[in-house]
Length: 306
Image (cartoon, rainbow, N blue to C red; front, side, top):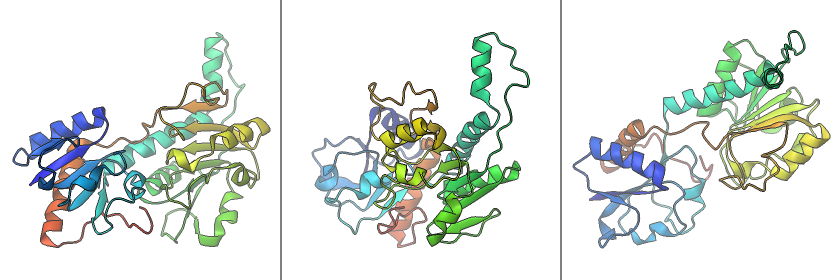
């Protein structure tokens, strides 16, 4: 029996160190090269090459090294009977919520204007306001709900939207109530998973539904946004600004107009990073449960894609 990690170098090294420390009794394969692929029963993956897992004929479990699973579910070569699990870590929600709060509060308190004033050695007292914000969180699953709860507890008006009704401490909408949701906000926080339904969701047609200029914070997936439409909406005033952590192509190409746009803030997909130690325990727990025929709490629905 052997586990394998198939991922880019940086997360691979961190996961390898933790796995070997926590489970030294389980042989660990790094990458795809092995003379005995039949020994591999569990793979931990992130952005693995399409078709890479076909050589592991005795594979029992696929574990995504992040909250996203589209890199697994979009690979049609993976047999449908193999369960796919993902990281569900309270620390991820803690990091994600703090990131969203940082982006929201910087916008709310006109931080970038004060930053520019400092660079010009200008005393800008009373020149910039606390912007009134009405926050909408699009996607109130594990991560989105945690952020919305914290925004609510800070005293900001916040509403949520999800495909199905949710019990929340703040007003929330679902199903055909999307127009009601989008008409009430001037800050849109996007935390939806990537699915065929959310592909290109953040587009100009959506932005035209805003009742006032709206600030966009996207921490979901790059394929959820249409970047040329974001630039167009910024230039026409439908968007008052954008704080983006994910992009259609990563790393973001140097030719992208987003880099130099005065209303755009960029971070390199770091809003919520996985913590290998906790994640390793989750992998081992999932595999143990699988062997015992027990339910897998982190299992992904192939139909819902999350």
